[in-house]
Structure formats: C-alpha cells, structure tokens
Amino acid sequence: MTDSKANVYDNMPNYIESIFNVFQSVTKRATSQQDKRLKTISLIILNYVKKMANDFKVELKNVAEPESINLIPIFEYISFNNIQLYDFSTIDMADVDTSKNEDLERFVLTHIYYITQPKK
Image 1 (cartoon, rainbow, N blue to C red):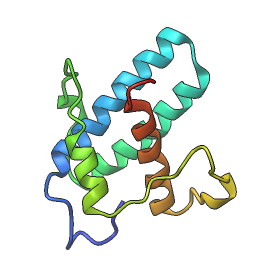
Image 2 (cartoon, rainbow, N blue to C red; image 1 turned 90 degrees about the vertical axis):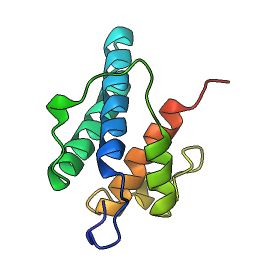
Image 3 (cartoon, one colour; image 1 turned 45 degrees about the vertical axis):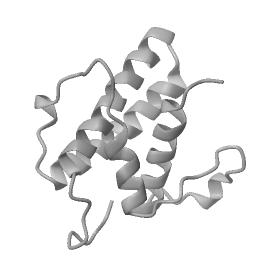
Image 4 (tube, rainbow, N blue to C red; image 1 turned 60 degrees about the horizontal axis):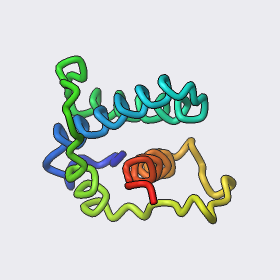
C-alpha cells in the first residue's frame, strides 16, 4: 500500500477488481470446505482490498464475479512495486509486522500468490 501516489501503478482499478475476485473465490472455497483458516485469510484479503478500493475510489459493489480471475494486474502490481513475497516454507512470523502497511501488503499478496497457484 504505497503512501506516495506520485509513482502509482496505473492499472489500480483492475488490480483492485482482481484482488476482490480472489477474495470472492477464497470465501466460496472456505465456506464450501468449512475451512476456518481459509476464512480468516479471506477476511484479511477483504480488509486489504476495501482499504485499497477506498484509497483509489473503486466501488466494490460494482465488481462482478467472473468465470475466471484475471491475475495479470496482481502480478504487474507486484513487479511494478518490486514487492518481495514471503516464502511461507521458511517464514518466521516475527519478521511480519502487521502494523506496517508494507508488511501487511506483502503478507496478503503472498497468500494470494500461494492460493492462486495450481496444485501439484
């Protein structure tokens, strides 16, 4: 969540829409599987996307649920902002300070990355 809007990724509405679509998908999966951990992750994603939508004046109520999620804006945003995702296999939660916007954003985007990758 960049504090300076001078050097902002220029596709923010599509980025926010993609994040919201991921939230919708994760929420559906969490509900159908009755997975409390996944439900918690979906709420973290929702809080993040609501703040971003508010910051960039995007109406989430107008976002339709697509048949497939366009992940391109998410990966472009990560690249544009040079965000280094966490490695969940080696992460120490003491390294994540959720009071810092940058850490919280990395945490959310890392979850989205792992959730959206094909299962092996």
